[in-house]
Image (tube, rainbow, N blue to C red; front, side, top):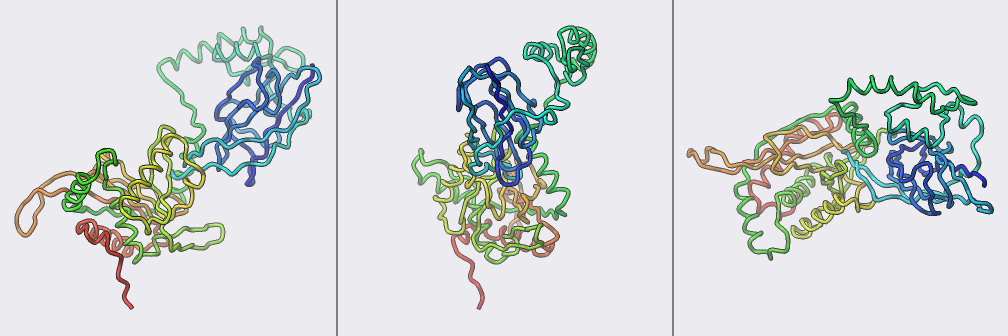
Length: 411
């Protein structure tokens, strides 16, 4: 029998380490070549790593949430006599998206690490047999806190027995709590949200919109369509109206390249649709939204949302937005303060539409009202321009026929 150490592969795009999201094998398991053994995540990708060989798993490095450096030992296999170790190619998993948007990486290069670990690479590792690792896990013992009495500091069963009473005391105080490690997509969302809020001076602007006529149009269009065609929501109508408005406010259809200190203004309007999924917030992108008709827009938004929720969205479907629209639907509340999807400079939020009394032509009548909550990067969008843009969007939505009329530019 011989052993083969597989190291964390180079996943491309300047990756220096990867976070362990989930192990699909454990010490003692027998795996086949190309069987997925672990899912890892970089800042740009969720990647499923296949086994480079067939054999029995001797040990693995890192628990979910831990980061392993590229080139460091990831997993050790015991090979049958005569088996040959070959490099493996990491295969990108379904794209994930970000709360900013989270995306999958392009196909990474073949793994380069196939040699046995050097003494320096394993220095500081916890030494314990697979059986003792399982016992420690079942007893809730953190092996990094246990002093091993075996050769080279190896942890023996007696060491675990000594540590067990301490672990029982520690866990008794936490019997009424549950600890949830922040890993994978949720960690990435947290980091990007924090970065956006920390570095972007947000200017928030909320305006109420009378969507009574828009609701009438929406209901009429829904009644005219086959029942299996899908119900039309406010979202595609708002996105269409937004593309018309951006023709007059191009400074809001911009990406900020912080590394170069450059604002990149786009002619095309690639609208991100913030979508809640079981895995967290993802932002699939409706490309060239300014060129789409209403039903095409509605179908594309529905298609992208379904792919994001089922974790089937590709990298191309999750990157490249120039402005984002977010909606909580029936949970939209009165107002919100959406966080800008960096490197964009603006985000528009839809709140819940409700009927309430309003004064129209001197008379109190029932109207359907919906608030628009928006945030702008105040470094690059002045408050006046932000307010003027939302007022222009309000005008389009309150007179929905104008949604279908392109902006007339003065000569």
